[in-house]
Image 1 (cartoon, rainbow, N blue to C red):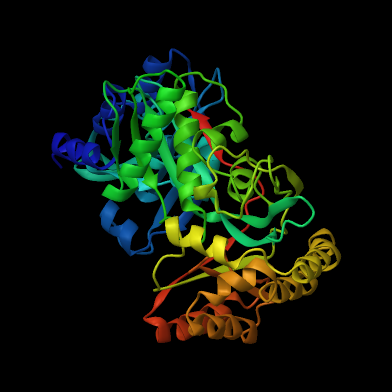
Image 2 (cartoon, one colour):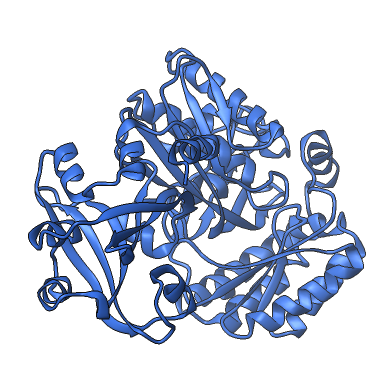
Length: 510
């Protein structure tokens, strides 16, 4: 493999590689010795798995052996012995029949680096690199390296050749945001379901109030670093424009110039009912402030980027995660809000106070069904709906608040899925949620009914849609199939099965 060409391809995917990263991906020498040189500390090995297995077809091909031959399978972490930081995660496979007894004994003993075993036994060998690439970090890798899920990992595979035959096959991984020569900020946000607004009557001198649930997926993952100019990469032009405008505004307000490079690793569309615009804006603002050492609360960030002027669910999801109820805003002449308006038309209004923050049961699963419909109401259209459809009848507000207080909240506190789901279903017919549903195509009601009939404890519309959600604990695949079948009438759509996220945005400095 032409490693220089492959490194250029990797840089086109993820951004510039540091010299240390290039060396680790391209070296044909001992990785352990290189790590000790880079860190200035001894490297220790922690063995996670060690067993003799039968070679499958892939292992047999890699090692030039027959399927079924005995192979020593080993997974280890190479750690900085002084700090405990995991530097490399490595898997190896070795044909047992090709090993001298002394070599085999050392290899099967825990916690000895392969390079040192080769050196100890004076084995003449060479390394042949097979591939180098980028892969997203899944749950296991994110936990091992203490990084955000789906952060890019740099990975290479190579063989150690002895006597003209493969002696060992090795795969090594390490995070892209490790072994850097500049400081970076990495942020992963939740998304959120917006269950409903509580009071769009305002008769008691407060308005808005929101209920929501933070979700593990989809999410926004971005990283930022200092740069001679403002640049945004890794996303479509519309998302890049939003990030650029937000970053320009925040950098000006914190007097930091415009020197930042932001890479959007993962994102989802705005205006589909999952809070993508708010999460992208808050993540961009936090990245700018962290990079330039400006300490800001989430509420301050939200006000800076014009979020939280109606519902505080997006802001609270970014900060806390979980199940959230906010208390809305003071309403009336001379108060925070003098009219009914969405966040986009409520500039300068503080995010509302969080009244209730409770963990959402992790064993309750959430299906997101996103029909192939136009994006939900936003901008002037959304502002017009608020203006023309409010105030909602006070009796509906009272019924809604009674429903939340005496059915939805006990359902969460007692982890009673049926109680909570029943409340979700009833809420769809009350207050401003009934208004939001009235602007949906008639097929949306059919989709809600289909998910409930398939076993969902509760199903509803998130914000102005088009995303709908269903909550259950078992049988989610049946509910998903019912949703997909129903969405065919609307031209198709996509589904995700996810869980609540009971923590806010993950912020990491690399």
